Length: 141
Image 1 (spheres, rainbow, N blue to C red):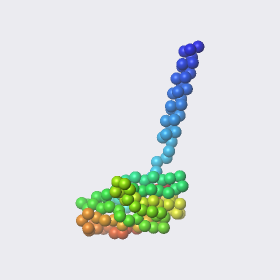
Image 2 (cartoon, helix red, strand yellow):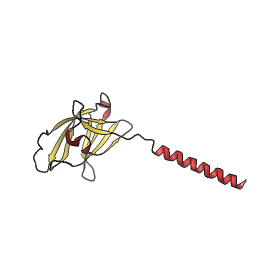
Image 3 (spheres, rainbow, N blue to C red):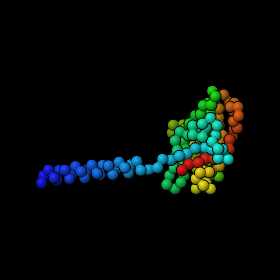
Image 4 (cartoon, rainbow, N blue to C red):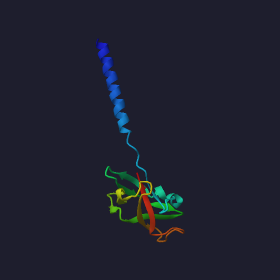
């Protein structure tokens, strides 16, 4: 009888651990990127390489932390994000620029919300073929 109780206890503990592990990985990943206003991808990987991290809250508000972007020897940082859906911008404790964007203003989650990105480049010169500021769509779901 004792061996059966131990076996049942071990099986119950294993079942509970597996259930908790599955729950921890059940969350869907957040996909955040920039696209051109017509929906096509930005050049040279700028669609995702500008973003350090992105958290999408339950009320559909995205907090985006940006990183330094290198392009053909130019290093640039985003220093401004504007648009109707932008709630706030600023710098975090690490000195990284961030923006809080309300995704509820998107027509559809695939098209995103229009934003205007302003860059500051280390050489003070905008890379060839790139506009500064740049109009883009921010997509996050």
